[in-house]
Length: 145
Image (cartoon, rainbow, N blue to C red):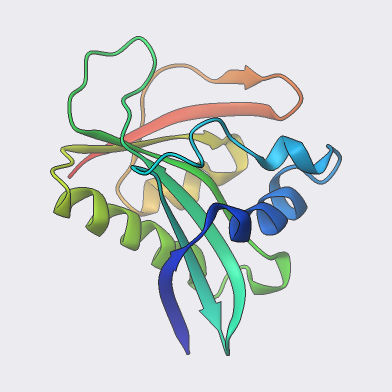
């Protein structure tokens, strides 16, 4: 059974580091807005074990005039749980939370390989592919709420 609940910043770091930053030091998994009161960290559990995480921040894309936007960041599901709907549950939880808190748009910087995942769930590419040094090629993706 999949259970979604709020988790602490410290709970997201191990999975974030293992899945998204495996060749970087553990502190690379700590993002600047993680400890803000407005940040919402979500975990998905299976049989009591945390298997996936995501963080949600009330912020618009850099260089945009966008009110009431929420940023999805650091979505990660343990590799042995891929393809089982955990990422979809996390993204649905982000959309629901953002909409319930006045969000008008949801966006993320998606790794190129994650593009199909986000497109299937209603996000569209916004702009050209770009590189995040040390991490790789990304697309900004966005959807209205």
